[in-house]
Amino acid sequence: MMTAIVCTAAMLAMLAFSDAAMNAARTAASCFAEGVLPALLPMMVLGKIWPEDTKHEHSKMALWLRTGVYAFSAGSPAAAQRTAALRGMMPARSWECLLCLTGVMSPMFFTGTLGGWLESARDGRVLLGIHWLGAVITAGLWRMLPCKTGVSIPLPARTAAPKISLPQAIAQSAQALLGVCGAMMVFSAAAGLVKGLLSCIFPVWTAQHAEWLAVLWAVMEAGGGSSAVIGAWQKPHALVSALCGFGGLSIWLQNLLFLENGIRPAKLLAMRALHGAVCYALVGILNPF
Image (cartoon, rainbow, N blue to C red; front, side, top):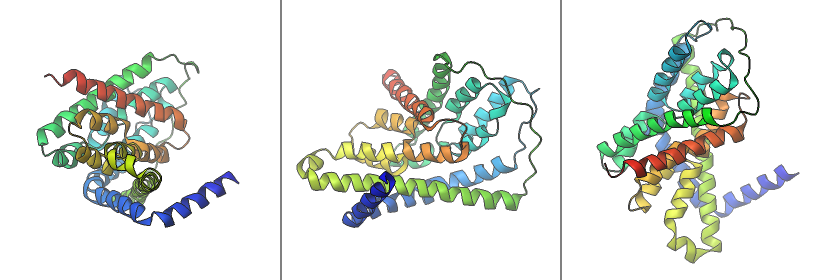
């Protein structure tokens, strides 16, 4: 009953504020086509044809290093796809820390898209380095948190997954990317609806606080929202770093698509929030240098 009420209210809001929702969704689709798809599709194809590690005799350090390098090169959600395949090869706590390490955005988004919006390729590279460092620190902090579930026993070694040909990898990756695009557009449209509703109820406040509406957009969808934050804030670097560390609800949902039932959604959201807080603090600490 409640779901039906929410869906009905959302449909009515879409009709009432169709322009705001359409413009936000169009911006997300443009960001996906120009900044996400070119960087993510090749990496997801490589992730599909890259042989999985199915043997427990691999050292933990080597496993972490290989997965971390791939994640830092590919970004989300390709990194989540790769990390999900390793869930049965280590204790649950270690796998969660690895998930913190690999919960990063595409480096091409920082060096290309974000650097262009900031009109400084150097700033894009610096924020990328902080993003990576924040992921490492987040994994370490997560390891230090008290564990209520205890240490899990690793699952038995799995049989090797069937090999996937290049055409199959391309087809499967393209289909998965439709889900990524859909998540970006849905959360961007939701941000547009909230903005339209607030503009109707509180027109004066909305006109005077456009920067906070940009933050709301970025919290829901980090791609187009980051562009709005950069345009609305005079010194956006720390805020953009934190929002990219969080990744937005869109990337959170994208990762859940690949992690399936491997982790509770609230726990993954807490990981992303911790990464965002660490990135914000790092910009403040490193800013004088």
